[in-house]
Each structure stands twice: as structure tokens, then as C-alpha cells.
Length: 99
View 1 (cartoon, helix red, strand yellow):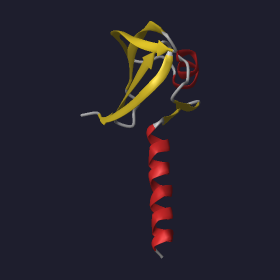
View 2: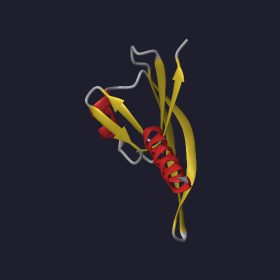
View 3: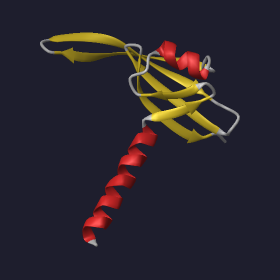
View 4: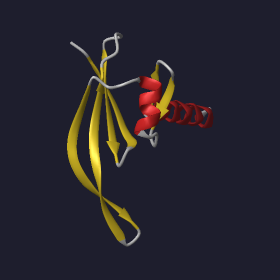
């Protein structure tokens, strides 16, 4: 019984993690690692793009500065979607209730 409960809990946690890393847009799903081109082709143009500067990313012994942007989408469903890109790749998706 305990094994079944632990398995069920693991499945629920895995499913909730997957939902946090994807977003459904009008023309398909986007997920972590998608390019800005992929996001625009599936979600359209954002209502705002905020320049968040640069961050350092380590590639073995090399450190590169990559551009960080936050894209804002406000679809008619009432949720504000904030997408963070580093070096042109989607790294974070945050949803907040639009008041």
C-alpha cells in the first residue's frame, strides 16, 4: 500500500513539474529550451519585451555573457504570462492572475 502511495505521489509531482515548464499557445506548446523564433511562431508577438541585461553562462572553461529578456503575454483568459529568455532560449515561464 505504501509503495502504491509513493508511486502515485511521484507521478503527481512529475506531472506538475512538466506543466510548469510548458505553456499552451494558440499554435502549439512551448517549453524550456525553445528559441525566440519558435515562441513567436506559436504564440505571436509579445505585448512587451523587457531587457534584463546580461548574465554569465559557463561553457566548460569559458564564460560567456548572454542577453536576458523577459517577454510579456496577456491573452484574453486573464493570466499574464512572463517568459524569460537567456541567449535566445526560453528558460522560465511564470503565470500570474491579471487584475
